[in-house]
Length: 408
Ligand code: OVM
Image (cartoon, rainbow, N blue to C red; front, side, top):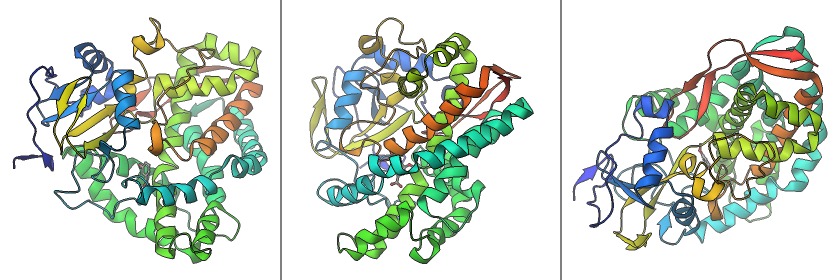
């Protein structure tokens, strides 16, 4: 069997068009929109010769791959490596990198720990923290949107919500970034991430231990399910690791991308200020238009098909959220426009199907809090220099966003 990037190298079935591009080339990652256009234009599924795998970027075929978890499994990894062939770089996540029935139990525990009720009880804390932070930032006027705001806000609420006693804010943000980079091919980004996680991982493992958590947080709620016999204590620790993997860099990216969207579209910020009931739909539009995660992978667990094209067992398939979220077939001819009143029902920023983001309630709670505080205090969000996108094998986010916050 020929291997490429740790998965079975497939040849495309006749009729599947070829897209001769490296989706993980740093120039493509920095400006992926031409790649997205080609991906959708060629068909429901394309062959990527560089990695001998398939990719989907139309809304319909991407949605299909996410929601057909029986044919497109997660247990063989959601990056380029097929766990059936090579060792995973870390013990696999027991919620992300599993299929039913294993997935069902851990998903239930996490959904309960992150339920709308839990998020509602956190809303006052989130609102207060957002007000304090934005008051301070407005007084500065010139801010670095990524560190001062997009990172600072989640770090001011999420570790407390989880109940972490261990604090290392740099590690918390960077761990998620590393986990996402590890989903990519064996490129510079992935190698750097694997090197760096060797440093971070022991700290993460220690931070997830029961005796390092406060008795009242989301982490403790997960351990309580171990006491109830629903999961083991070791599984509880793994689910807390999932919170730290998926819960920080993602919200950081969502908030940073929101700031970018509003700096780029001041008229949309005016609309939000005129009608704060648009804050929630506006964030859905940020997720559609600026998708904090651009790509997740799946593996064909059996022989199947996409758009009528045969797909053989063991085929890796990239599900390109960024392309699907900009598909004019789904979103209309202005799919590439950011519109706070679009109400983009079905946007796939949180994925779709049984693996759709289990933390989406808390993510929405955090962003609603920060946008609410900003809307009340900031008249305009202006670029104060050139923003820079951060190349990542899976995350779509800025690493530099100089801003001027014009006080209301
Ligand atoms: C996990 C996980 C889940 C979703 C995304 C993710 C960093 C990780 O369970 O560890 O990416």
